[in-house]
Amino acid sequence: MSPNIWIFALEPIETRYTGQWHTHIPELLTKRFGHRFNVQQIDGIQKNTVPTPGAFLNFSDTNYWKSSQLCNFLEKFNQGLVTASDHFIFTDAWNPVILQLKYMKELLGQQWVLHGHWHAGSYDKNDFLGRIIGDANWVRETERAIYHAIDHNYFATKYHYELVEMELFKANTDHWIDRQLINKKIVRSGWPMEYMKQTMAPYAKLPKRDLIVFPHRIAPEKQLEIFKDLEAELPEYEFVVCQEKQLTKHEYHTLLGQSKIVFSANLQETLGISTCAEGPLVNSIPMMPKRLSYSEIFRDYPEFLYPSSWTYNTQSYQDKKQLLTNLIKLQMENYHTFVPKIEHYVQNCYEKYFHSEKMLEIINEYI
Image 1: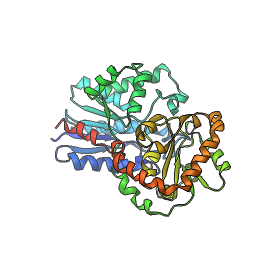
Image 2 (image 1 turned 180 degrees about the vertical axis):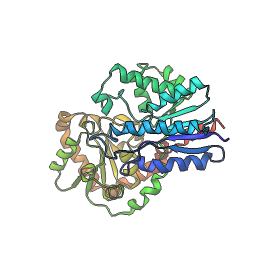
Image 3 (image 1 turned 45 degrees about the vertical axis):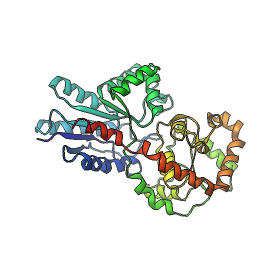
Image 4 (image 1 turned 30 degrees about the vertical axis):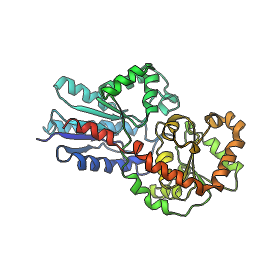
C-alpha cells in the first residue's frame, strides 16, 4: 500500500483564505506527489462558520472541528488505511491533535512525519492568545510541546520564528536558531498561496477610485480607531472597513481592486495576506508601519513603509497625524508613480512569502 499525506485542514471559511486552502492544498500536493503518495484531507464537522468577534475562527466550534478530525482519522487508522511512513500536514500548528498523533507515533512505533504551519500564539503579546491568556504556564508549555512534537515547523517570515525564539524559548541566540534551521526543525517557507495571482488577476483590471481600505479583522491589535480618525481628517477620500460590510470574497476582492491604498497600523502581524499579497496584486499601494513582518517583507521597498512611531499607539498617532495625512495625500495624488514599484515587488519578492516551495522540498527529501 502506498504511503499517505494526511492534510489536517483549517475550517474552510468562504470569506477567509482557509476556504481557498481547502481545495488548493490537496490539489497542490496531489500534483506534486500523487505518483508517490495518496493525498487525503481530513475534515472535521463544522458547526459554525461565524468567527468569534475579533478572531479568524470560532473559539468554541473549532474544538468540535479538531476533535472530529481526530475521530475521522482514527476510523481510517482502524480500517488499516494508515502506513508507518505517512506524512501529516497541519495547516495550523495550534492543534492539540498533533500531541495525540505524536503519542500514537511513539507508542506504536510509527515513522510518521509531522508538519505544522504556525500562524501566531501566546508568545506574541498582541495576538488574541497573548492578549487574553498572556504567558500562563499552561499555554506556553502547550505551545512548546506542540513545537517539539512537530518534525518540521513552518514559519512564513524570519520575524515570526525569531519571535518564537525570544518569547517562547527565551533563547535569543543565533546559535539556537542556526541549530533549528540546520536540522529543519524550523523551515522558513512561504504560505501555500500559489493560486493567488490567478485569483486576483481579474480584479487588477478594475478602474481605481480614491478609496482606502482597512482589510483587517476588527480587533484591538489592528488599531481601527486610527483608520477612523484618518477618515474624519480626510473627507475628500473614501474609507472602507471591509469587515463592517460583511462582504463575500468576490465583493472584498472587488473593493481591493478599486482601491488605491490598503492601510495598516497593526501591532501584530506575522505575515500580512491582505497588505502583502492581495493588495499589491491589484496594484493597491500597501501603506504599513515599519515593524513586525512588514519591515522584513518590504525591506527593499521603503516607499511602502512609514515610521513605526507614527502609529505605535493612539498618542503617538495624534502626535504624528499630520505626517501620516500628508503621506496619504502624496500617495493619492501621485498614485500612478507607485504602480511600477508595486509591480516590481510582485515580480521579485512576492513568491518568497506566498509560495510553499520550501515545504514541498522538505517532503520530497523523504522520497
